[in-house]
Image 1 (cartoon, rainbow, N blue to C red):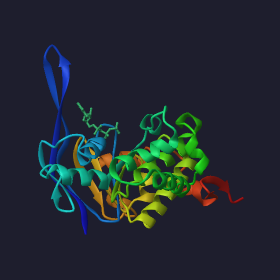
Image 2 (cartoon, rainbow, N blue to C red):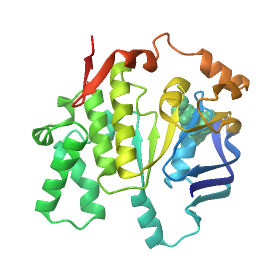
Image 3 (cartoon, rainbow, N blue to C red):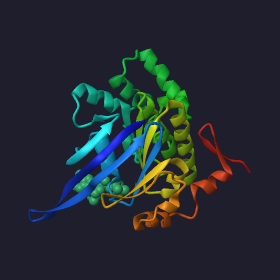
Image 4 (spheres, rainbow, N blue to C red):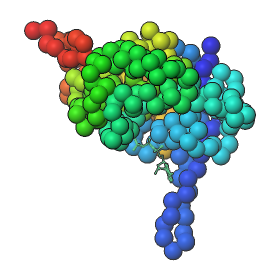
Amino acid sequence: MTMIEFKNVSKQYFESRGWGQKRSINAMDNISFRIKEGSCFAIVGESGSGKSTLGKLLIGLDKPDSGQILFRGLDLFDINNQTRQQLRRDMQIVFQDCFSAVNSRMKIRDVIAEPMRVHLHYSSTGIKEEVKRLLETVGLTAEDGEKYSYQFSGGQLQRITIARAISIHPKVIILDEVINSLDVLVQISILKLLKRLQRELNLTYLFISHDLHSVKLFADEVVVLDKGKLVDYAEDVKDFDKLTHPASRRLLEAQLPIMPQQASEDMSVKKGVIVSKK
Ligand SMILES: Nc1ncnc2c1ncn2[C@@H]1O[C@H](COP(=O)(O)OP(=O)(O)OP(=O)(O)O)[C@@H](O)[C@H]1O
C-alpha cells in the first residue's frame, strides 16, 4: 500500500542578490514518487539538491507551489485542521543536529514527554512509565531521564530524539541526515536501532542522506536529486549499478575509505554500546 505520494511537486525560493534584485531557485522541480508502507525510502543528493525542502514540505513547514503531496491518499494541503493535527502526529522528523533539537534547559524525561503531553492524554504516572520504557527501548536507562542534554554524547542524544519521535506512535519518520555528524561506529549502532524499531513498530522511513553507502546498508529504494530534479532511481538499493546519472556517480565516488559495512563485520552493538568481536 502507498503511504506517501509526491505528485508533480514543485517549490521555488527567491534569493536576494542586493539592490532589489532576486534570483529564483528551483528547490523542487516537478518531483513525483511513491513510498510504500513499512519501507525505507532514501532520498540522496549533494548539498543544495533539495533533500531538506522535500522533508519540510512533507511535515508542512512549507507549502509546494504546485503539485500534490498525499498521505494515504489524503492531500496534505487540502484537509481540515483536525485531520492535519492527526497527520502531524503520524509523521515525525529526526534531524541531524540533535544538540539544537533538544532544549538544554529541560531534563531528558521532559524532552521525551513533551509530545505525549501535547498529543496523548496519559496521566502523569502513565507518562513517567512510558518515558522509562522509551529510554530502555533506545538503549538508555531510566536514570538518564534525570540528566540534561549536555551530559550526553551525540549518539546518545540521537537515541533520545528517536525516543521522542516514537513516543506518540507515528507511522512515518523522516530521518534527515540523522547519522551524518556521528562517527562511523556510532552510525552503525543508530542504524541498527532504527532497523529494530522499524520492525517492531511497523514504521515507514524517509531516509534523507548524501551518503549512498549508508543508504545501501539501510534503505530499500532510493531516488537521487540533483538541483531540485529527480534524476535517478533504484527500486532495490542493491542495484546501485542502475544509478548511472553523473550526480549519482559523484556521490558514489565521494565516499570515505572506511565503509559502515566493513566496520560492522568485526563490530557489534550490545545495549547501545559498540563492542569488538575480536
Ligand atoms: N527558505 C529558503 N529560502 C531561500 N532558498 C532556500 C530556502 N530553503 C532552501 N533554499 C534553497 O533551495 C535549494 C535546496 O535546498 P535544500 O536545503 O533543500 O537542499 P539540501 O539538499 O537539503 O542541502 P543540504 O544537504 O546542504 O542540507 C538550495 O539552493 C537552497 O539554498
